[in-house]
Image (tube, rainbow, N blue to C red):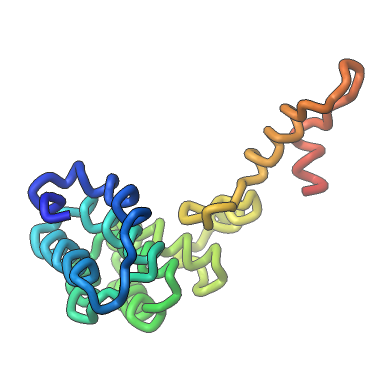
Length: 182
């Protein structure tokens, strides 16, 4: 854990550590994760921040308010999506998104298209675009921040095609037909 800041490639392996350690809210692990998040935000280390946020959210590790502010100020899109997916920081994320829209500058909206889409997908906000792209993606169930057990319609269709109990003569429904009934 102490080496994670110096060697960011270790951060994804924190999941192995977390599985073997009891984390209680007042212990040193919470403080260490907050320290890593803070350092990643201050030094603009997007991957380290996103991985650490993922572990904190997945394992219900409280993130200090000052660290949340640093993450939002840094403005890393994936980290903001992770915060948004937790539903804990709705007001702060909503304020951030509103500020981006108020700028009325398409470049900034495009920088955060993933955040805007995820909020649209979860029915938290309308699309900032005047086209149907988000509607089409949502119609196909595209979710870039799915729950652990979520499967896209295409993944579910793979289970239909690869059903081990199919007999040689059994007909497999086409993907288009599957999509029509799914």
